[in-house]
Length: 118
View 1 (cartoon, rainbow, N blue to C red):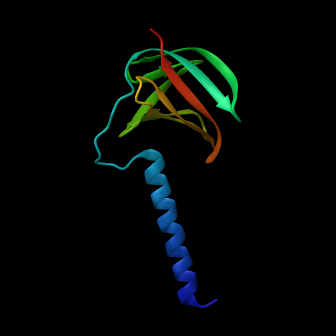
View 2: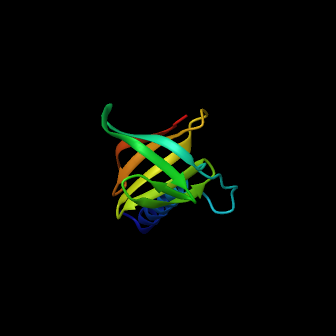
View 3: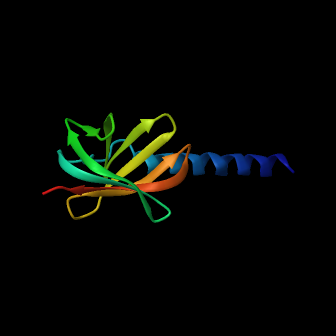
């Protein structure tokens, strides 16, 4: 392959990685939304099957589930790093709750919903 083709491929990969990272983490400088404090029911899904359903709370910017995890605000809600390599995204669902994908080492492994408890 020519040097020009190699540079083009490298540049394309760099742009794709940057865009993907920005989409996953949110872009700096944009308005942030918080995941609202309150009581929720957390449901963890994989392949359309409920794996775990339990009470959860959001307190002081933390998700309290099995442990206490810091919520990093994004423009659509937030994300939580549950453990190294495991991230869940919490996007507002328009009904007072949150839903989003769950990742492990960058691969989608399921999803999560937080439904307000009334």
